[in-house]
Length: 477
Image (tube, helix red, strand yellow):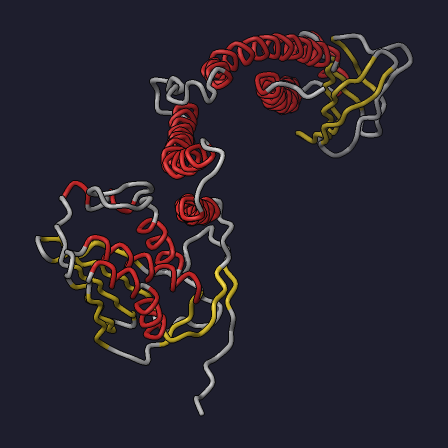
C-alpha cells in the first residue's frame, strides 16, 4: 500500500526529529559522563591536597609517620570518600572514611595515577600518590565509589528517553496537522479538477492567496486549462465552420438530384446539366475536404516535408501558368518579374500549393480586367516573393483575421482556407507569409523563404515532422 503525501511527510518529519533528538541525547549522555568523571577526579585531587597539607603540619610538629597518620585520620574528614595512608612498601598505616568492600584492598602505586577499580560492590575511582616530606616517605590514596555517577547517568538517560518519546508524539501530531493544513488547498484543487470537463471548460482552479509552490501549481494548471479550452473551442469552431462550408455544396447536390428525379423522364440536356452541377459541387467538396484534411494533419503534426533541391522561380512560373484559365475568365493579367535561377530546399508539392493559393486569392480579389503582379527577389539570404493585386483594400481589423480558417472578406466564393494553408506551408519551411500593404488598388502579400539551408538543419516549426532529400541539383546538359 502506497502512503499518502501527508503520511510520507509526517514520517519523514518524525524520522528527522528522532534522528536529531537521539543524536543529541547520545552526545549529551557522553558529555555528561565525561564531565561527571572529571568533577569526581577534581574532588579527589582536592581531598589529596587536604590530606597532604595535614600530614605536613603534623610532620612540622615533630610527630612520627605513624602518629601523623593517626592525627590525619581524625582531622581529615571527606564525606563519601575513603582515605588511605601507607608505608613506602605499600603496607597500610591507616584507612578511614567510607568503608571498603569486604576483602578488597587496593594496591597503592608509587607514581601519581587516577584509575578505575572493580570491586565486589561496584567500581571505584582512586587517586594514589607517593609523598616525601621532611625526611618522611609515605603513600596516600583517595577513593570514591562510582555508583552515584552511574545512578545519575541512568536517571539522565531515562529522562532523555521519555523526552524523545514525548517529542516524537508531539512531532507526529504536529506534522500530521501541519501537513493536513498545508495540503488542504491541494485536496481542494483535486476536487475542483475532477469537476472540470468538456461541458464547462471555462472553469478554473481556485488559486491560494499565498505565492508558494501550491499557488504556482494552481496558476500553471489554470494556464494549461486555458490552453486546452482554447484548443477545444477551436476544435468546436472548426467543426461548426466545416459543417457550414460543407452544407452548401451538399444542399446543392441534393437539390439538383431531387429536382432531376422529380419527373420520370428528362432530356439528355437536362441530365447533363444536373450532372454538371453535381460534378462541380463534388469538385468543390473534394477541394474543401482535402484542405481541411491538410490543416488537420498539420495541427496534429502529421505532415512530413519531402525536401529536395528545387528552383523556386520555376515553381512560381508553373503556378502562374496553372491559374491562367481562372485569370482569363476574369480578364486578369498575371505578370512575373525579378530574379531567376533561385534554388532552395523544400517540398515541391507544398510550395506549389502555397503559390497557387496566393495566386488564386489575388485573382479572385483583383478588379475584373485588372492585374496581378509577382516579383521574385533576394534579401539577406532569403527568397522574397511579392504578390500584388489591384482590388479593394482589406480593412485594418481584417488584416490578421484573413489568415484564420474559414474567414472570408467580401462576398467572393471560396472556403477561407487558402491563406491559412499558405501561411502554414511558409512557416513549415522556416519562412513567413504576411500582408505587407493594403490600400485601394494595391494589396500586397509577401512570402519570405530561406535560400541556402545546410543539410540536416531544416529550420521548420517544432512539432512538424520533416524528411529532407539530400539530392543536389544536376548540371543541365
